[in-house]
Image (cartoon, rainbow, N blue to C red; front, side, top):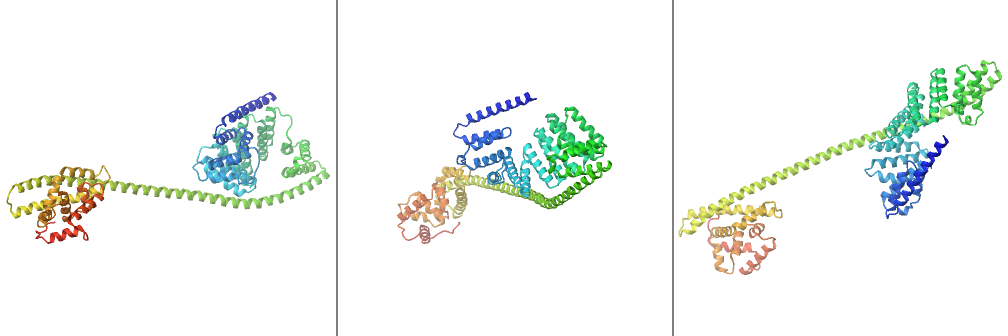
Length: 580
């Protein structure tokens, strides 16, 4: 046995040496702090003392950002707890709590709340501790960190047990055992099963308690924890004794003693052995175990057993007609019983207060979780509605754009068809020396309709400018192909509609070129500046102003707008009936 123990120590020391060597050699990079934090976390479970040493080698000034500070505070709090250094100040762990509460990291958030709960537990602030552990539990159960979740349920079980909430404690330990099982932690799982059995026994669920003790013993045997096997066996014997099955209890104890070659019972088992022998009528053995326990140092703080043993001893004395011993143990029993009742009364008052407080706390936390789920549901529905409306608007706008594009594509085809027809008619007219007024009016009306269509298309092309896949470029291609014919048509129609106004302008102002006469014609026909710019295929509005400036200069205009001047000039002529 000693050689096995020595070998385990050597293996542990060698493993630790290798890990520390790796930690030292891998932390020579510029980012040494992150490396140390990673190594500390790697050593935390098996070598928490070495983990704490690494953390203590990091000074606060070396922590460069909030993430490093949060991780350091979390690992440092964890290392202190695992090295049994109890702290009651929450200033360190709160750095991690504040950071990870705002991050989408369930594991870190659960760890930070758990170790904050440990701080409050050390400070005997039960309410704050339970609140922190409940928050840790909610975060831990979202992930697959079975070990941490098991630890949370385990300490909740301890808190419930301390407040005499035996049903709640049993359920918490039962849940802890399941998580430890999934985490492949048989020792922790067995401990949780054993504690669950204690609580089931406390509320009278003795058959359930026996089952849980039995399952715990099986796990303890698998990991060769003989002390725990024996302890739980004596617990089973206590339950059997309560069920009036003293023979089964004695056989249970004898069986484990024989299996593990146990010659002497531990002192903590003496009260049970005293009661078992009393029930079996073995008064000498009962007296031996009772007196030995009462004379021991351990019994001074164990009021329950100190009270039970004098009760047994006085009954033995009475059966043996030893009245002096009977009175002595009777007096001791009454004193201890009175003291126990006083202590029990205080505990009951605290338990009632704690139950009210913790019940409200758990109910509040449950309501908070429901509220969060309700808010998340509403948020999801609202987000879905917004998304649906956005998609609907997008689809509608795409359909409208497609409809408009198709419309103007259709208009463009009509324009091309009308242009071809009217061009042929115009050529025929120009070839004739004389025409009737009716024929001129028909042609002018047709050309005017064509020009109106061109004007609408020019306006639309301006709106779609800057989008290569839109109508603008396609229409610009059309204008480039047909611009000379379109120019002639616009000048011809304006001249005919306004009594030869363009011919008169050309005669009085011979400096005006064809493009400038076209500009004047488009003003007469009501073209906008943007439509004129598109017709001229200018890239910016400044070009239009330059053209207007040149025309103003050639016409000698100074204190009047070009549009006004042209209207006045046409009014002095004898106009035809206006078609547009």
